[in-house]
Length: 133
Image 1 (cartoon, rainbow, N blue to C red):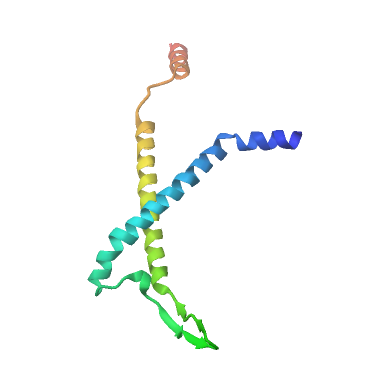
Image 2: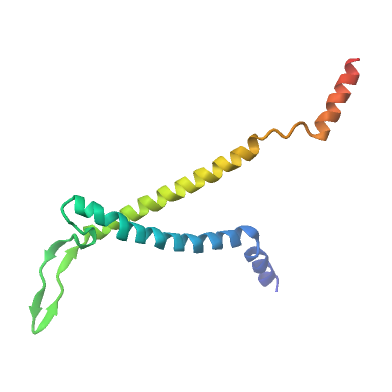
């Protein structure tokens, strides 16, 4: 019973739940960015470099063959898909960077707001002033 209680306590801690929510939202965000890159950003880039669709770029190492009436697929190195995924990663990383930078600047503004001396500091100041007299 102790193991189950410990596991429940672990799973219900705020950090674990926050992490789970972050992973789920991150997965959905990744799909949005992948679509943005594949459907919006890469077609104009492909057009600029001569009408190339990056996903279709590949190097054929061995052509397709028919052996004993069975067609064997060609062996290809799909470097265009790697380029596409690299662009996806860079854009997702840049978006996360901007998001974190925005959150950090908002939190710095909260910290920079002068709150004035605390009651404890005021009391210590009064005691110091009284001792000087």
